Length: 110
Image 1 (cartoon, rainbow, N blue to C red):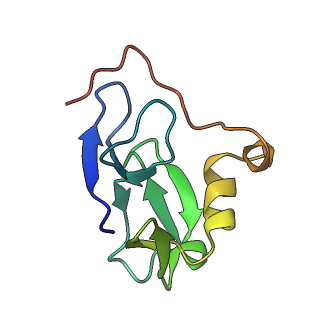
Image 2 (cartoon, rainbow, N blue to C red):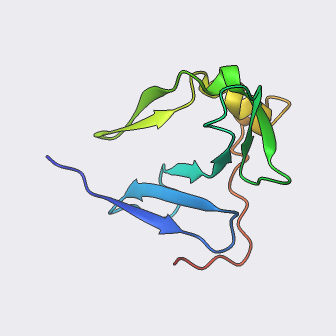
């Protein structure tokens, strides 16, 4: 059976696209797609995630070589070591046991 997906842009979140199953409701599992800077500069030791000026700096070695990650019946390109990239974004390790990424402020879906 084929799954269908939708992409949303939520105005209350920084430049983020959300991919989720078409029939998803509430807190359904989804994927955030973030803007990154420095991906094309092979000399850069870090990549900026989410904001060019204020973005989190992620070690290039945590991102490259990228790998395909499954989401339902999709395969999306992701970082080489998802744990290391996530730890750079949410330091301290709380993300391993607590959802820390659902910060929305007066959201409207576009």
